[in-house]
Length: 108
Image 1 (cartoon, rainbow, N blue to C red):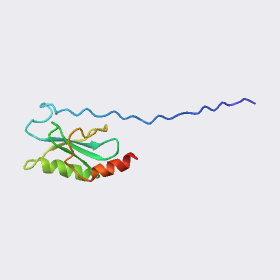
Image 2: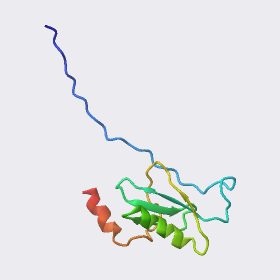
Image 3: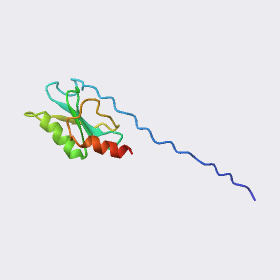
Image 4: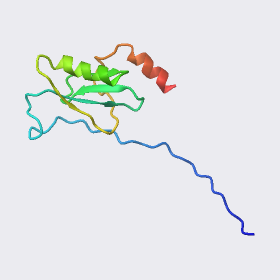
């Protein structure tokens, strides 16, 4: 009878690379059209951030992040970019003011 060795595998949490948010190339979209990145951060909250870093916010719902981008770009519409990678809001939160409390709860 052959002995079978079982080896314990230790799973490492999957590290998703963070998106590098840079202004969009004028060859891709006109500089006159506001553009917003819409995506999730590592806590799972929705992030809306203007491509040039002028304004951004955190939200519970994707639809809220999109509405924020549309309101901030009035009277014109804006381009929405949905990175596949997570990214963090690196500027002051102008979104949901209660999200800071939710973020703290999610970290625990």
